[in-house]
Structures are given as structure tokens and as C-alpha cells.
Amino acid sequence: MDIILLKTNNENWNELSGYLGCLDSARRKSVLKKAGDGDKINALLSRLLLLSELEKRTGIPMKKLSFVKGSYGKPYLKNSGLFFSMSHTNGAIAAAFSEDGEIGVDVEKKSRVINERMFERALSEDERKTAKTSEAFLDLWVRKEAFLKRLGIGITRDLRTVSAESLPDTVSIDCGEFFVGASGKGTAELSEIRLSELLDRFVKLV
Image (cartoon, rainbow, N blue to C red; front, top):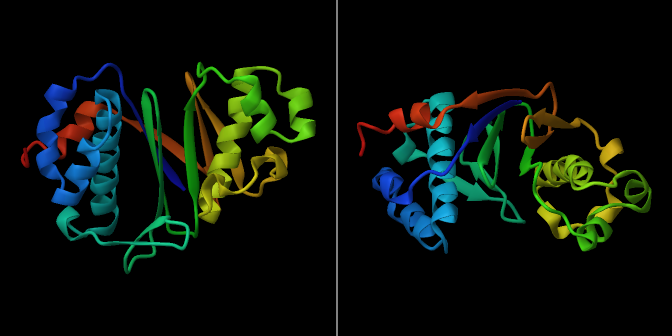
């Protein structure tokens, strides 16, 4: 499984909004529906990263990429054996790709504040005995989220019934200020892409 991590930092929506023209009408509208500039930036960059990586890995031009959805809404690339998963949080976007079956990825910022209710809703009784900090919680959370995304059901399942330590082919990767959860066959290989590198892929289209 290949994971691409894009870190963002105080980008300006007015400076990035011109890249909306690289998306089709439906994707542009979905980005513009987001409430705040930060959410718009995350949505825009997530779509640019996904489309450019899919084109790179399949040879299919971005404008010809076609998607279908599973029973729980998980997207798949039509007529392709390439699986993908996306996640974003404040300051980072993660995209995972594999030709070896279903995968899931999740990213969270370590500094995210977690309240007691989240511990009770997401962790098993045994996990609550050992996970005493927000960072420890998030280390478990990203593994659970990645695994459930791999199954295609997301958090429709009670996370308290899922033990992070016993999930098959599922790991948490420490990326400095972020945790990245990855679930899927094979070794998870993570690399980072700079924002300038991503935008350079689209500069001729703007």
C-alpha cells in the first residue's frame, strides 16, 4: 500500500480557488458547498491529490476517470483494480493506493483535543484502561477508522466492539505531529508530497 501525505499550513483560499477550474462541475460545486475557507481548501486539495495520483497510477486522464459507489457509499474507480482511500484533518491530507485488495486510511493531528465522551464512545473497556491521553486515544482511533474504511462501512459500526490491537493488517504510523492509520495487505509505505509539487501538476490547466 502506498500512502501519500500532504501537509498544509495556513494556505489562502483566494490564492488556491483558481484551481477549481481543474475540477469538473460536480466536484467544484461540492467544494464550494463547504462552510469555511479551511474546509474548502481541504476539499479542493483532496480532490486534486486523488485525481492526479489516479491518473499517474492508471494512465487514465483525469477527465475520463469514472467512479462507482459501494453499498455504504465507499467510492471505487470504475473498471480498475486500483483501490484507494482518502482522509483529511486540520493540516494534513492522506491518500492511499493499492492493487492488492481493499484498503483504508485515516489521519489525525496529535494535538486534537478529545473529550471524555469520545473515550467512552470509541474505546473498549480494556482500551480505556490503558489510553489515558488524547494522543493515546488518537493512536487507537486512526487504526479503527482505517480498518472500518477498509471494510467500507466507516463509523456505522460501534467502535467499542473493535479492538485496535487485534485488527489484521492494520497499523498506526507516527508522522511527527500526525498519526496515520493504514489497513490493508502488505507493507504500508508512506511518502510526503509538497503542496507546490501537487499544484505544479495542474499549473497548465489553471
